[in-house]
Length: 417
Image 1 (tube, rainbow, N blue to C red):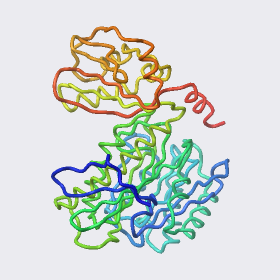
Image 2 (tube, rainbow, N blue to C red):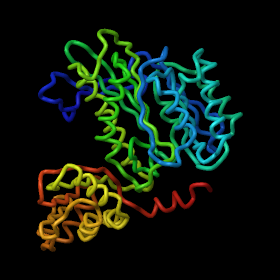
Image 3 (cartoon, rainbow, N blue to C red):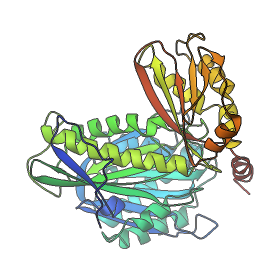
């Protein structure tokens, strides 16, 4: 099934069209996926997945910038250095982070097992893990799961794979887009997981994208980095960056035709499709934030520079005081003023304006009268926009976040129990 979506506006300078479609990571041609229950999760749910191309294909990835990066991240950086990959193998329920030399050996064993099953070299396999930090991997279950998952690979649906990468997520996060450009048709699909420990500085918790356009490795890298910067790098649930963050794009080239490089006109259309998939997945992560009851778009405009705007927006979106105020439907604009003031953005308190859900609460850095009952009702909505206008320039940026509820504390207070 395909659905035309008017919100998929294209750039007037590029003649292309975008259409949502189904299938997730297997929507593009040339990819197989599976997800199985290997016994890593105590719940018995799926916890190992494999996404594979029919051969090694151009691939790009971005990773956590944490100095505590987990062994799967370190290994995948090394394996993708040549810009090629055959498959990615993922486990949930155990992050294989802060596990020393054994953790590195276990990550390599995962790659070697998948490579043996697929008939390729270990360096053609990317590895990713998510779950509890500091716990040894149950390798017998993991390796058995990889063998089972590779045997179950098919192109029917990405559902099982999307389920197998979940931890505290409450729903599958997957989507796909078809792009038509210059008489050619390509599809980009993706899946992601993430609900807590979310403030990427590169990508999200885990995200895997596939594409059947004949992109080069350089084109994959350019498209992915631009998309991540405008999507996953603009979300936050709790201001924490994971040890295992990874976002990866594989291009099978299954649709054939002339290869696509960053300088080609078709590249812009495919890159737009990649960006739309990343944006949709990023918004899903925020909507599924641990304990979240509201989706919040924080917009800072009128900043002196383009760099100031996202910094100020993140400062607001990451403030526990701001997030709890939104949870309580309290139009406490002082929380916004505080958060903007502690950011590195240039601010003149005599020009600050704050707007909660369309209601101006502060102008020229001072309170203005507004109807508290009206504001409370407006902030009870599921989706809320909060605007901070610095009135200093043309810089603008938006960050997506969620409120901070009692449930967030419960989920994380009981994470290991």
